[in-house]
Length: 543
Image (cartoon, rainbow, N blue to C red):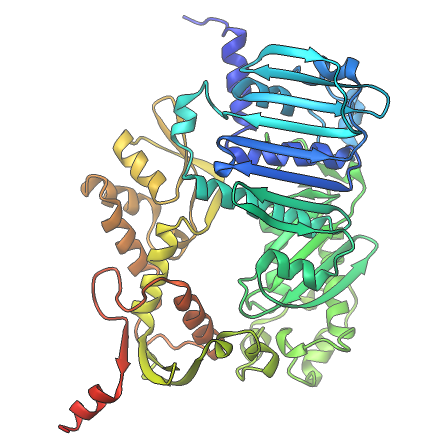
């Protein structure tokens, strides 16, 4: 029998589409702060945001008389007509964020527009209080007990450390996109970082990543590109369009074009801020506003080509060994390749160029050595049989088995839920709860629906190894034995013995291995690192 759902059920369903986890709350509130013109944003979380999230800003604030309206669904100051949807210039526009948070948590707002100020509290969609109180200009939002009334949703949240890492990653991206905003991020353990708006780009990067990097900025009327060069930091693309952080299909479209132009090598840390007329993009395509659609593809490719041309031509003072296709002096053929017009399709690097040039040089440069693994009392001495890395650490030689070490690194990453890849379209699977919980423990992002579960994200390592259906079958046959499945996935996604690595790949492998608590043995108990101390060497010669 078809029936109309009660308002309470409808509100919870709608809230679930907007608020999936603590980082969703942080995202919505930070975007509200930026739309309010804030130049100082402070974010504080307790227990990974599961217990409490506090976000304060110095924006324009909300008049007291409008506070009750602000927490109702589909109320906003950012659009007023259907026509406005075709030219949205703000980050928010649907008027759902505060209402969605209030439906699934305890929400308290203190706000002042400079003339009036007040406090409002809503818990589980029910108004608790609304009264005038003194408050500085701006807004402070406190969110406690997230999903207290949705135990099923809270059950599938990750450990507090994982939820914290998602929040940290989001704020890291926003701090790079908005360098003119002062950001402060704290937890129950203290200040995670404090980034004044006047902080130089290199120091901002160091505060966020704990590594030094060369900084280079490139700009066109259609976009800005910041590049941070450090071979010890895993490369990534941070993409924004008109200030909006993008993570959906548009992100992968831009990433694919950049990788082609970058010569097929690994990207450094790139922050790309695209600027386009609001009526040229459709931002109303994703419930969490994480994706957009470009109305025209030509300007996108042209903008990226112009930025890449700047990298080629404006290289004074830049370590060009770290730029693809350049090895001190650009070859005549490569120079010709980049001399075409900005609309010339030959700007995309061909296979021959990709084979001849790499992002990082074969020889490790001095500024790569400084601050890298060589400064940690460790040296890479040789590479034997395309399998074993000869390392000298603290005066003792060691042999590192590249497969076993990589396997241990992968196992450690899976155990610590190190990185997930969101699927463009959620995948429905009919799973029992034991298997679903095992997948969640391995880092899968799941949403329970009628008849099964939607898999929304998978561990990044899964993309390098076995197919999803095989992993699920393995877990079901092992009756949810997560450790066995984790070890198997780590092995399948590791480099193989005899698989030749480049010098930079060797250095990256050793650097990652040093982060693991004990890399001496792989997850199956086989040796991964063998110490060639004096006693062992003398035994080999029967001394």
